[in-house]
Image (tube, rainbow, N blue to C red; front, top):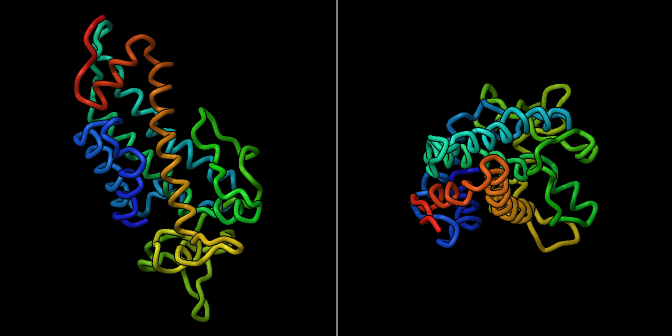
Length: 242
């Protein structure tokens, strides 16, 4: 997914000034976009997953790790403090998690599977505290991508993209990164939506929920301090004592 599309997702999901300040939003977006500096780091983008098992492994190594780091960075810097250890690090790791979350919908065949079931608005179970293969539909995978094959990331055979053995599809033919090009611009059968529009809508709603889940995890981790920590993360200040 290109920079413009990732930025749009975060701004649509979290851009309301009732959620966080422009400074906080900027830190989230910057870290989100920087994930694309690491195109060969598959876990950041849910790339190169041939099965639900692979996607689960990437969830733990990437998305869940970033969200956990965001919680750890939010820890009060002293036992009675209401200020997180590193506001910027917490928001940056949240941004990295948001990038992976959006790429799951753009780079996997979740949208295609849900379209077959007539459940295009159904989100994947990515926001819990665990993810196991049985929680995902059979036949779920993501596209193969490696820059050794150029910017499209996949080998060609007789002029057609052909992933290496063991991979069901190429990123170049499965990805829904663009609203105007390739698979993303195609219309989903029996709907008026493009594959890009469906994946974009899921990413926006999932990112909104991601912030809600993050706040709940703060509450579980830090109890009565969590509300002030959350306020500091979002606005750079704590609530006054009652």
